[in-house]
Length: 324
Image (tube, rainbow, N blue to C red; front, side, top):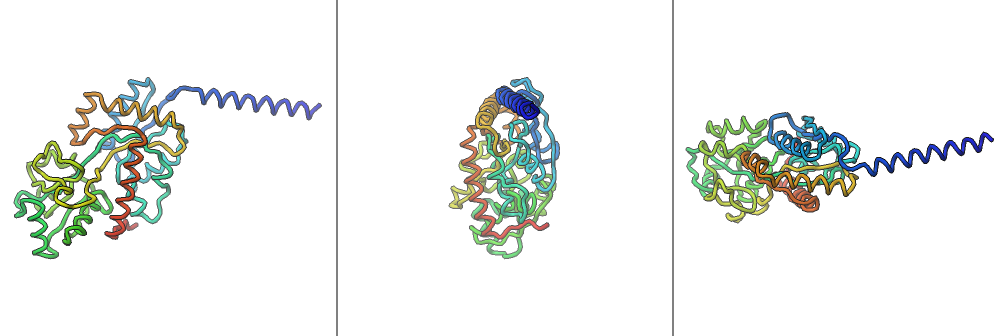
């Protein structure tokens, strides 16, 4: 009797659990609040983009969408938080392209960005500008390279910090042009811009968002990416000047934890792509000096994997490492 009763209770419990799981699986996504994780402090470009996207998701889906800043360790704390989160589509990462450089810069990373996170869609692209002070003798990239070669050890380039996108670009220029610009790292954009305008730097790689408001105080020599910038139609790309691997853009993108259901990834990707096409959203992003992206998850995944391979090679060849 007791055995039969226990079996009945177990079957009943199993049926309740099964029905509950089926009910959850049938819940339309999203059926509860979403959390957008920004791995950097509030106020920066990543945070601003997250809040633009979050507001529109909340309006269209009718679900509370919160932006949560989890800064620290160059973004790895926030990235890791999402990589370890339940893959249900409710914890979303707003990341930048430096995320896929980190495995080759750091000896120990608590997650693998290519295995533990799923690309959803790219929000925006950010080309970089190689610029010099207005009083620099160099009028173009060719004369700048020639000047540096005539005076070994004299000139430098500034970046946003060791291992950042701008550091990798400067190292790539050194290798391809056969020059010896000394790397001067700064903690973010404001001090880099200040020192560039003040003439303490001979050159710097500056992303378009930080560069465009300050173009009056510097001279752009070349831009990264596959095409010239609309704001700088007379400034050539590095590719036009026969430099390679400068075609990669910095980017801001949306990721979910690995294992997120394909329909959830697709629905989030489609909705953010729609949001990015809204005229008011496009205007806000372009006003930040960025290029609106969008597109399918598969397209963004191809960009992520291609960029990772390119940066891995550059970082290895330039022997760039982050020290603890």
